[in-house]
Length: 628
Image (cartoon, rainbow, N blue to C red; front, side, top):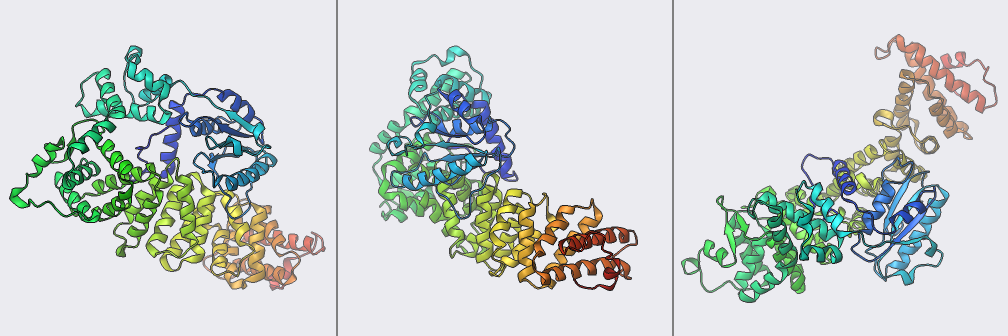
C-alpha cells in the first residue's frame, strides 16, 4: 500500500519510528475489501488462524496487517514469520499476533511453506495467539484439505475510496467531481491497489513540483499520463534513438536524475564500456555538446545544472523500460551501478538515489540476488568506503514487501557462513536497526551466529547488539538463554551467556525458568572466578532495591542436585556478604544491613533445599565463610 518508491531509510531516524509511521499511514489509507468483516470475526477468538485468498492486487497483505492490528487485546507488535521454519522451536504467548506472507511463494517452494504453516498453526492454536496468512494467488488447488476451512476469499475494495484516502493522506485538495473522468473510472476498476497509491503519490509530486499547473485536474492529468502513457512513449523514443551512445545517455540520465548533468555523461561512457560498445567515432569538438545531446532526448538542465526530465516520472518509466526489455543486460546494469558508485562527481545523496533506483528495478524484475551481489562487492572493499551504500541497498531489500523474506534468508545464510569482516559489520547493523524493529527473534538468531563465528571487533559489535536486544526483549532473552544454556563449552557461548545474565544493562524482568537454566550451565561448567563478578552484581542489585525472592530462588534452583555447585554459590554469596564487614572503602556502612538481609535469604533458601529448615542459624557459618 505504500508504493514501490517509498523511502525506508532516513538519516538520524530510528527504524522503529519509520515502521510506526508506515503503520499509521496504512491505518489512514486502508479501505476494507469485500468479506473483510468475515475474516475479522474468525480472528476474534484466541488461538485463531485465518488464511486470506483472493486475486493479486486487491491489498491482501494490507488486509492481513490491519486484521492483526485490530485484533482484540493486542499488546505486542505484529511479528512476521519466515515462510519456512528456522532453527529452534516456535513458541508463542497468549494474544501474540503473527503475519505469514506466502504471496510470493512459487509452486516448487509451496510444499515446504505449507509444512511450516501447519506447524505454525498448531503452536498458535495451542498458545492462544493469532495468525493471519496471505496465500499465494492461484495455488488454492495445492492447499491441504485440513486448511480449507480457514480460508476467507477477499474481494476488491472500492478503488475510488482507496485513491481518495491516499490523496487525503498527502493533503491533496480535490472535489468529488474531479474524480469523475473516464481514465480514473477505468483505473478504479482495474488497477491494483498499489498502483492507485502510486497514482496519488504522483499527483502530490505534480503539485509540489509547481510545473504542472495549479489545479487538481492538471496535476491528476499529468499523473495519469505518467502512470499509463509513458511506457509506450519511452518505447517510441528508443525506436527513434537507436545509437548506443544515445541510449546509454538516456538511461544514465534517468538513473542519476537530479544530479549534475556531467554525471550522466560520465555514466553513459561507463555503461558503454561495461556492455562492450565502442565509443562513437565523433569525439571532442566534433560531437554535439552536452546540452544539445540532452535536448535531443527531451531532457533539460535546470538553472543549477542538474538533470530535469520534462514530464512527470518519465525518468522512472525509462528505468523500467530498460530493465524490463533488456533482460540479457540486467547483470551488466548491476555491474555498471557498482562502477558508477565510484564516480567522484557524485554527492552522497546522488549515490543513495542511484542505489535506490537500482534496487527498485532489480526487485521489480525478480532479481533480488543482484542487490545481494552489490552488497557483497561493496562490503568487500578495504576501509569500509562503501558500507553506507551497502546498508541502503540491504535495507531496501529487507523492507520490500515481496522480497523481504528473501533478504532475511540471505542475511541468515551470510551469518552462518564465511564472510568478509565488512559484511559481518554490516549484518550486525541491519540486524540491530532494521530486522529487530519488525522481526526481533529472527534478528537475534542471526546475531548469535555472528557472535559464534566472527572474531575481533566484528564479534564484539555483534555481541553488544545481541545482548542489547535480549536485555530489552523478554522473548529474545528467553529463547537465547534456552539456546545457549546447553552449550556453555562452545567457543564464545560461555562469554555470551555471562553477558546475557549480567544485570548491568537489563531492562526487563528476566524469564526465571531460562534465567535458572543459564545459571545452572555456568555453575556446572565454568570456574567460579568467571561468574562470581556477575553474581555479585546481581547481589548488589538485590541489596539496592526490593528483595526479589524469584532471583534468589532461581539461583538456588540452578545449583540444586549438585553439592559442589551449591557450595561454590554459597561461598560466593558469603564472600560478598563478608565484604561489608571488611575495611573495603567501596562498601559503606549503610550497605551492611542490606547485604546481611540478602545473605540471610540465601542461607534460608539453601537450608530449605537441604531439608534443614528455615530456622537454622546461619549467621555463625556466614561469618566463618564455611561451605555447605
